[in-house]
Length: 176
Image 1 (cartoon, one colour):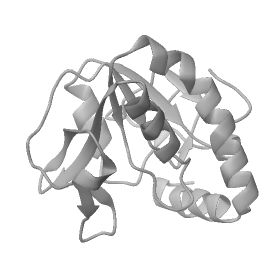
Image 2 (spheres, rainbow, N blue to C red; image 1 turned 45 degrees about the vertical axis):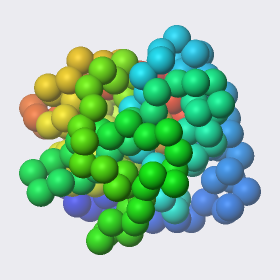
Image 3 (spheres, helix red, strand yellow; image 1 turned 60 degrees about the vertical axis):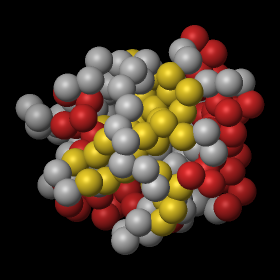
């Protein structure tokens, strides 16, 4: 199955989750993520949209524990990460994604929490198709942790040579 077909399949799988499962699974993933969050001070993380693993509670936890939080901003040729101290420093972009108002890129991310639609057991992710994260992660050294629902494990997904392998993947059922 090609990547565009897999994306459609896994978007539909995520949309089929009940609100209770979405919140419950997100809470379990957050618990698995806590040990990594505690070990790092500079956290790169996406701001979740509907049907993604909920990261807003993770972001709130980071603020409460005085972690430095960096969130992505889409630019013409890729993404940058901007340090924020509150989600109030963000606004919806033209694609309906919450992102920082500032264009001031920051470096120093130690732990990157990566979004994904699906993944394989070789720790590769299927993203949304623009390769923003692959290009960013290829040029920035940090621990790369993908978070996803266990139902999005995709044995038919074969990574390409340009896909960046993650260090760890966390689901509501397992960590590997």
